[in-house]
Structure formats: structure tokens, C-alpha cells
Image (cartoon, rainbow, N blue to C red; front, side, top):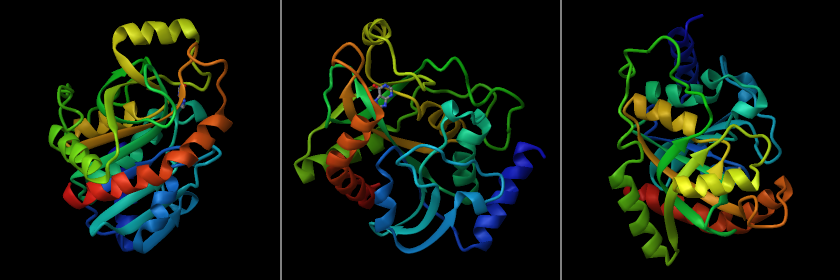
Length: 269
Ligand code: HPA
């Protein structure tokens, strides 16, 4: 089945379940999925019940698609995303973004846990731009002309007006929202200290194993993007060791602020 046919099939399936006219797609990263529990009048589907959909395997990722109202907006939330390092193709990783576009979303909010380069655990970082160090691109293969051009511009992938709205919301809540460039790798190994020094020189503020494929596909189709990283650790070489348990624990500490921030932003987006 072609990608376009799969997108249309999944779109029709979700619409038949009542997931109509979402305004925003939310992609909730490691430990941040509990925001989906605050969605009202919700319709919830297990990933395993959705045609052409991937499966989530990481601890802290629930594997549910949640539709409903959040801050008075119609949202479609991924509670748990698909990672390339799980063995998913980039088509599977980015398929939900294609479907969000097909369903009529105007923008997506992409969140992740990330290692800080210059930023410490507990920092919320607004993503201003990204560096794709995955060595791959989700748009390789036949171009879906109905979504966007063969050679899409990435100059304004992280929508400026969304960033301004995010900073205004942070100020209103008295939260500090740092800004920086997200550098995306495939994982699943964390980086070496030498890699982190190199990434620092390249201008990265955070490093993580997601987000870049989804944002490339979003930008291709003209979806607006807001990206926020929850910094869970100092990147390799800036603290003694890294582990997933720490990532989950720190995300747990900042998720309250994080959820308030997203909800406040959504009102104005
Ligand atoms: N590196 C890559 N991905 C991550 C990190 C990190 O240090 N922390 C959380 N996700």
C-alpha cells in the first residue's frame, strides 16, 4: 500500500471514531504523556487498534492516541511517540504527523526529554531550530506532492509566532523558558563526551533522540511547529554518568510546570 493510501485509510478510521477537525497535534515525549490525561471529552484509542500505526516500546510511553479538548482547543495527542532507535522506519516515526495534517491540524506541539549542553536538569528549553545529526531524512523516497514540495525550506521550521506566544505564556506563569538549538541523533546509546564537545561547538543547546524527523515532515506539509525540550541531565562529559531512570525521574519533577506551560500556550496559539 502506498504511503498516501495508508494516510487516507488511517484518517478515515480516526474520523469514523469521532476524531474530527483537530486544531493541534501534541507529541508528548518521555514522561510527559500525562498531559493527555487532562484532555476533556476525550476519545482514546490504543495504538494497537489503529491501522498503519506503529507500536511504542519505551518505558514511560503509554501508547495511546487521545483526542478531545484542552484549554478550549481541539487537540490530538500522541501519548508516547515512535523512535527510530526502536527499529521503526522513519515513515512509521512520522506517520502520526502526516495524519495530523490530513485531519486538518494547523500546528503541532512537539516535546521531548533531552540532554543539556550548557543547560542543566530541570530547564525548559524552547527549540529555536534543529541540527539533524541522524544521518537520515524522513522525506527520502517518493515525494507526496499533495503535502509539500520535493525540496522543502527549513528556514522557519520552528514557527516564530508560536515561540513568541510560548515566551508570553512562560512570563505569565513566572517560568523561565530558555531557548536553544536541538540537535537530533538516532540513539539509543547516549553520546560520548567528545561528541558532546563537538555538538557544543556546532551551537547545540540540547541533544536528544527524537523530534527532528517529526519536525521535518511537519515543515514539509506547512504545519506550524512549537518545540519544547525538558532538559533531564547534563549531556555526556558534563556529569559523571547518564541513565534512563534519571531522565524519567527529572521529567517527573518538571512535568507540572511543563504541563501548565503547554496549557497556557494552547489558549493563545
Ligand atoms: N542524550 C540524548 N538523549 C537524551 C538525553 C541525552 O543526554 N537525555 C534525555 N534524552
